Amino acid sequence: MAEQIALEGNQAVAEAMRQVNPDVVAAYPITPSTEVVQIFSQFAADGKVDTEFVAVESEHSAMTACISAALSGGRVMNATSSQGLALMWEMLYIGASLRTPITLALVNRALSGNINIHCDHSDSMGARDCGWIQLFCENAQEAYDTMFQAVRIGEDLRVRLPVMVCYDGFLVSHSVEMVKVEEDAAVADWVGPYVVDRPLLDVKKPYTVGPLDLQDFYFEHKRTQVEAYPGVPAVIEEVGASFEAAFGRPYGLMEPYMLDDAETAIVSLGSTAGTVKDIVDAQRAAGKAVGALKLRAFRPFPADELAAQLAGKKAVAVLDRSMSFGAASAPLYSEVTSALYARGATVPVATYVYGLGGREILPEHIEQVYEDLAAVAASQKADTQPKYLGLRE
Amino acid sequence: MIYPRDAKWQDLARGGIIPEAGTALAYKTGGWRTFRPIRDNECCIDCLFCWVYCPDGAIVCEEQSVKDKPIDLDHCKGCAVCAEVCPKDCIKMVRETEIQD
Image (cartoon, rainbow over all chains, first blue to last red; front, side):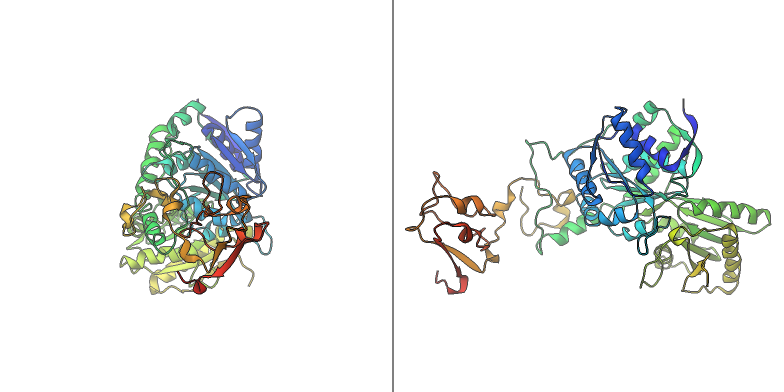
């Protein structure tokens, strides 16, 4: 029987890892993801999993070990945050370009400097071009459920890519929520065995990995990699639908909330999307036609699907929990506007930056955004510069 | 298989692999070389240090001997490790432009 248990997000994710029982976990602790690895290493020490747990000396080595183990034919998982992800940097690109399925719990935390251990999305966003799939979770249940789906998505023979399961540091990772934990056998059956199609340890069929690749072939190889992504959204939807059929909780690329007849909408990622939905409820009760779009898949960016959801709205606001210094705009806003405008939609989009380094986002901030959106809808003009929610200025 | 030089991106395997092992042999890097190792075979005592240390396997060794054997110039990059480790100082590095082939 599935059980409702009060768990922190990290505990739920470690539980999911126990149930997946991967072949290899190579990890190095960093706040706020530490608990995931700490709890899992206890499972390994207690013999509750068959996993080879590799305690490495850095995140760079952790990712290197994960890539090597995945190439060798193992199912691999890992967890990190912030500077830990930054230290994995060069290996992240290599893992994706070698098409190795790895499931990484990325507990979102601000990047230094100055040093800060609390939530924002600068770690995920800094890695947005490295070729990993990125799925954002709103709460502990979604993080737990998405760990299983990430394994299926990344290992799918049409995909074969590493996946980051992103959830907000402390807000989700250390908050206790009621989580429905499925039966071990039920989730293990649903995840299924790892189909190893090209094990590096098969000495009868040797091949060359990561060779020197200069002016003569590198360009063709990058073009080959591009081809991995257009099919991924359909697999994310397919796996989400299969998960719903098995366990009753629906998942897809995004979650539209009261969006069909909404005149204005807020686009957001992660735990803030939950707060936004609460405000939508309150505004709807007050007779206002507002809605929300929670984006789950940030990479690959589901531009067609997102544009279809937002085209025709009178005004849209995008909430970014990170900056892109020196860029024309913040990361999510950039993606949303280019998705819309490249498809001919002319909806004005307002840009907001919030929550850097764990600064609280409050209901009144989101109410303010909907108020601003009413004005943007009337004027059909949105400022290209972000407004900062909760900043002292 | 090793891909032909005109292979299109559609022809390449997933993940940038070469679906074969030991393919460095077919990838010639001798053109990178600025200095060519020239061994004085009279001086060579066949200690095999050059063969052991060569990072490119370019020192040809047959029947446990390198003396009088060629150096694989298709793969030698001219790094001069062989000249450095030779205990008899038998290997000289000569600038390619000064060699009349």
